[in-house]
Length: 190
Image 1 (cartoon, rainbow, N blue to C red):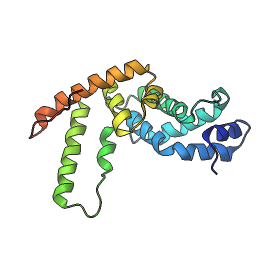
Image 2 (image 1 turned 135 degrees about the vertical axis):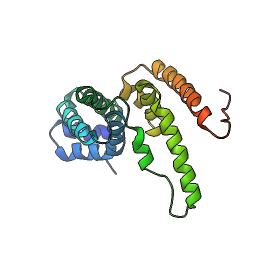
Image 3 (image 1 turned 90 degrees about the vertical axis):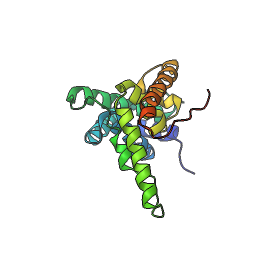
C-alpha cells in the first residue's frame, strides 16, 4: 500500500530524498500547471526548480496533519509570482498553454477539431482581456481544476475573496465572450 503524503513528509523531514522525490512526482503535474499559468511556459521550469528547493528547505515548517498539496502549490505560486515580478517579462498570464493541449482523439472529424480550436481561441482571447487577478482565479478553478482550498493556497486570498472574485471574473468573462460568439450564450440561473 502506498504511503500517504503525511508519511512521506515525515520521512523527508528526517532526510529521505526518496520520500521527497515521491512527493514531488505525485504532485508534479498540477505544480507544473500552476507555474505555467502564473509565470509562463518559458519560465515554468526555473520556477519549479526554485520552488522545490524552497519546499525542501522548509519541510520543518510543514504543519503535521495538514495537506501537502495546497502547501506545495502555495510555494510554487509564490515563487512564480516573485519570478514574474522580478523578470518583468510579461504583463499577462500565459494561458496560451491551454491552446497547446487539445482534448481531441484521433477519431474526431477535422471540422470538429477546427471548431474546438476556434472556441478555445475565443475563450483565451477573452481571458486575455481580464485583469491578472481575474485570469488567475479562473485559471486555478477551471483550467487547473484546483479545489477552492487549493485556489486559496495558490492565490493567498481568503476563501470569501476567492469566491467573490471568481464570481465577478466569470461575469466579466461572459461579458467579453457574448459579443464574440455567433450564437447567444445561455447562462443558467444561479
